[in-house]
Structures are given as structure tokens and as C-alpha cells.
Image 1 (spheres, rainbow, N blue to C red):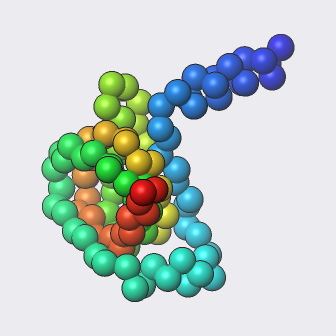
Image 2: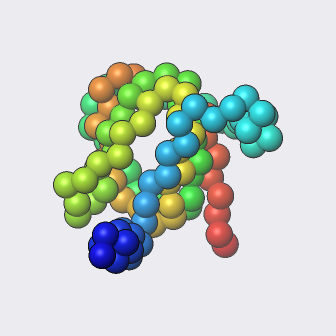
Length: 110
């Protein structure tokens, strides 16, 4: 019975794009992705509405963020040392509690 409930929850999650967080990936993974060659972006604490027109992969060098997906009260929390993937088409609000410094890369499906 518990398995059915979990499957149901996974199905409902699949209806909206999900933010993926990989906590503290090994240096070998970062090198494989070439993160140090990606552009950098920074922002101060505050709230920022964002819409992703293409998939973004980013690696946070510093900071702490709660990303609230549009139309939901749920949030995903991530910070320094995390590799985060935002799917194309996602709208969310970043609630930045500690200034962010990150490397990022956009992957367009077109």
C-alpha cells in the first residue's frame, strides 16, 4: 500500500517541472562539466522572480536560496557547493538569504 502512495506522489510531482539539486558533487564531476569555464553571476540578498526559457545548470560558489515554484507554496533550498538544474519553462521566485555567487550554463533544446 505504501508503494502505491509513493508512486501517486511521484506522478503528481511529474506534472510540474522540478528543480534538481545535487549536494556537494565531487571535484571530478565539476571538472567533467567544465564548470570553471562557465560565466559567473551574482546577486545580493532579496527576492527575485525568474523564468527559465532554457534549462539552466548552475554551481553555487557561495550563498543560500529558497526557490518557490510559481503556483505552489513548496520550495527547494540550495546553497554553496550545490549543483542545481532548473528545467526549461520553470517560473519561480528566488528568496536569497545570503548573497549568491555562481557559475551557470544554459542548455537550449532548440
